[in-house]
Amino acid sequence: MPSFSALYIESPCRDLPRVQKIRQQCAGLPEVACARYGEVFNPVAQNFRLQKKRPGLILAQKHQGFVLPTPPDFGFGNVHSYYFSHLLNCPYDCRYCFLQGMYRSAHYVLFINYEDFEHEIGKTIRACGDAPSTFYAGYDSDSLALESYSGFAEYFIPVFQRHPQACLELRTKSAQIQSLLKQEASDNIVIAMSFSPDNVGHALEHRVPSFAKRIAAAQKLQARGWRIALRFEPLIYHVDYAKHYEALFKKISDALDVARLHSVSLGAFRMPQSYFKNIVKRYPEEALFADEYTVENGLTAYPKKIEDEMFSNCEAALRRYIPEAIYYRCGKEREACL
Amino acid sequence: MLHLLVAFMHEARPLIDHYRLAKAAGAHPYPIYANDQIKLIVSGIGKTAAAAGVGYLQALGHPSGTIAWLNLGIAGHGTLGIGQGFLAHRVEDQATGRCAYPPLVFPFSAKTSDLLTVDQPLNRYEANCGYDMEASGFVQSALRGATAEWVQCYKVVSDNPSAPLGKFDKARAMTLIENRLDEIDPLVSMLIEEVLQWRAVDDSDSALDEITKRYHFSETRRVQLRRLLRRWKALEATPILSSIDLDSYPNAASLLDDVRQRLSLHRLAF
Image 1 (tube, rainbow over the protein chains, first blue to last red):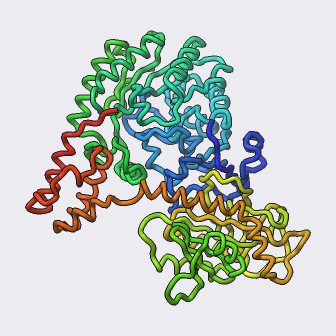
Image 2 (image 1 turned 180 degrees about the horizontal axis):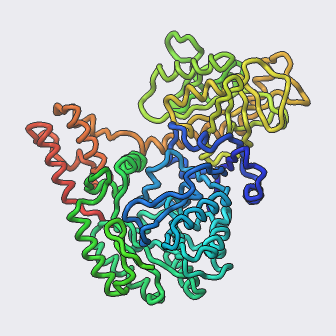
């Protein structure tokens, strides 16, 4: 459970019921009023790495850009792919994550006007007509990690249950699944769980629940009929990586019912160059960023030769454990899995 | 690595005594006291004086690296009792409406409060709000050289609705600060400790100075060297100066090639 340094609240939403509930949960924390969240979140002179030690929680209202189209080649979905972010920043501290370089502040911003999100999601789904659409909710944070405060899944699962033609992906490294277990599973809601080999996890995924806890959560969800997807993103190049990834694929395929998986993906390590530069400045001693990278079209990535080799080896290993039909490569090709 | 700013000498005196600060040598427009870790400036009253005091310390320079800034002093408060201390979690300039939000990243257990910086002493108090005359100028000026986490304001309540502001009593100001040293001292120690930890991460590699003294580096090559040294530090257990023969290269370019070549052999292992 994250320990917030303070609760920042946009004055206009101070008395809203969702804010009241969080204020009660956070009783005893300094409460700080602000006019707009940007006053706290956006100033230039901030130290992300220091703030990450003890971030504050900012409760705010979003006013525009509720639903956005995904970048090209993102995810498993179809032509109509969107993402929406109720939360900025993530309580986990995965060194390879682009969020480590995206914002100046490590405070969490929780947009509490879910009803406005719901309205825009509904409009977007209707605009797609009969065509299926996919909505990703774990782009700027972990979908479930702050669930006990946000009640995000509790609110949005019923929203998507009312729109069966649209698919919702909740992407998470959390083992907090109580709010999912309280609800009926739906075919159009996918719980995408990210995993890395143990050695990579220990070195780079700080504050993330243990593999054992997360796989136990995935098993529980599968047993209750939820559709689980597996995400192995980003692939991290290191000595004996092929052996470590294969061991991971085997361990997970032994633990879960592979025939009932929704999809499985591999993704390359890549991020906008400006984010990468920020991360290197923030974590200069991190060996991961001292490896060799190339920059192409503004994206920092492994050199193509390494990336190709990793995909080739990991895809070959993955095929030994999961059916080809549910696999897609994130950021390269798209295959509709629905 | 900690810069303290106080408005009055009588607020400073308990700190000077407690930290055994000595008057800085040379002629300065402000009283300045220092020891190995702390520099204290007595800025005079008001936000403009505070901003100028910060600017003066910045201009005086310091061994390079991160510096923490702390504004200490007495303040009015709408709720807290006389003698209580608080850390500001929001500093607003009454004249401009401009706000700063010092992040509370360090685990310090003092009460926290809004703090309104006013241009003239006030006799009106609102609940949960502190009142001073320096903090906003201090914060805005210190933020030019430090990130917000390193710029904090700690105040001791000298007046409140039950005991409104009267004539400034020097001896009382001194006593109020002195009586809160039990809370000020842990705050000062923690800031110094955190700065030291941060400097270990942040400080530039001394190898850079050593190498650039021996060879002529163009600005472009200096940037390349800095990048390679960062990679070296992250990847290699042995310091670079123990791994290469610094006198063996004909020029900077060949040194860079060699370091690059050595790094290319490294494989990341977890």
